[in-house]
Structure formats: C-alpha cells, structure tokens
Length: 78
Image (tube, rainbow, N blue to C red):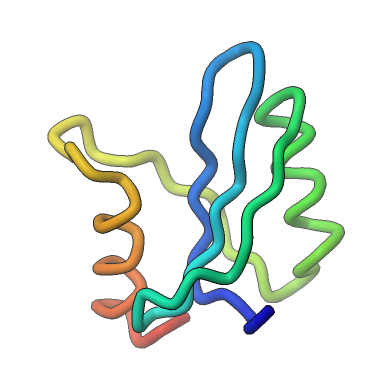
C-alpha cells in the first residue's frame, strides 16, 4: 500500500477504524481497533515521527473521508 498523507480515525466506544488516504484521494488501507487509544497507538507504531498531532473533525463535516483528503490537499500532502 502507498504511504498515506492523512489518517482518519472513525468509530465509537466499541470499535474504531483507521482509514488511510494519500493527498490525491488514493485509498491506502484500513485497520480495525478496539478503542481510539489502540488505534492511535497503532498509528504511532506504523508511522513514528511522520505522524502529526491528531486533529478533531469540525462539527459541520458531513463526509469525514472527503474532508480528510481535502485537508491533505490543502496542506501540501503532508
């Protein structure tokens, strides 16, 4: 899988998915986790210092997947 530009953590208290995308929208894989902390720990393990701080989605976002790809485009694919 290609190296992602952005990661989306989505879920609830029972499970969280990490969705990975490149800045151009190419899907880079997903993984299932038992909690947000577990998902974030996995991202740290996978990406180390390339991982930037987690940001919350704005409340008005209706399509998180489109939003994170757009965010990556606007931020230079980083």
